[in-house]
Image: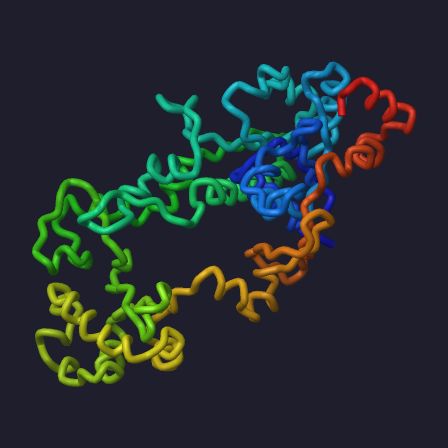
Length: 415
């Protein structure tokens, strides 16, 4: 039995944030019914197309384990089908523009009338406030949520990260909210609204920088590289390059082959507990007892010198050799792994973190599998649905329409 088996999700989401949420719920066993416009479907089906005539990787990698129902909600018969879906499903997930559901005739009050147990989950760019009606995309969320202002190097512009913390990060937050609401419904019998705003989600993921904003009011951030370089701090949390963001100083350092390979680097943390091991490994045993280096406070003004010495050593080793030498000594390091290296890593295939899926239009492709592993609920990643592939199946099995009624619905143009 799957963890969410028996839960029916009415999926009105598109692009990335909402589909990330509903795909996770589908992986955990929920029956996710993706509602799409007839003949059009999710916009990402035809975005960044790499195989002519096939759904894009953008779509396929965000819509596994779902069923596709095409439905024209502006059609009168289509609205009747939608009402039946609302009565039948447990959760509605949407990332429409603000007010879109109301204009369709499905306000929260109307949904409650149809199904008091319904949980309505929404992704929005901003929560209530001056910007709540603004359209938001991934990089806008990263900027408005505080991530970009603290990413990059001190002498450069703000930067966005390649990790989709605005879209996918918000989808993960929303999935948690939905599961929590389902759990509460078991006690109260009532549905409720769940909101995940992209700005809020990015800010949550950037919380250590809000921590530093408050610390900055008390004095300089001594673990930041600029402290040791004598550069004054301003009023806001600064960009900190590849500093660790925690109490243990860290840097990205060159490894053997860096001249040819843009990813021949390692992340190296000078954790206080293993300082003596670090000194031995890099050939600086004199630093173990030298009062100018022996304690964390003494080392803070000298981080550039210290990491420069460590980098002299890492440049004589590959990033994997650094890992092999340091890991047994509990020295925290990590190779900078490219997407090519991750795609080819056997252990990630073995755990289902990287999965090969066969698609009838595009053939085999790689995708990320479920990142959360449950011991009693294995996840088999199933391909994304073709547009409207399960329309008749859902009308019959989920909503109980007869073959004659389904024919009538099709003739009306509702699906």
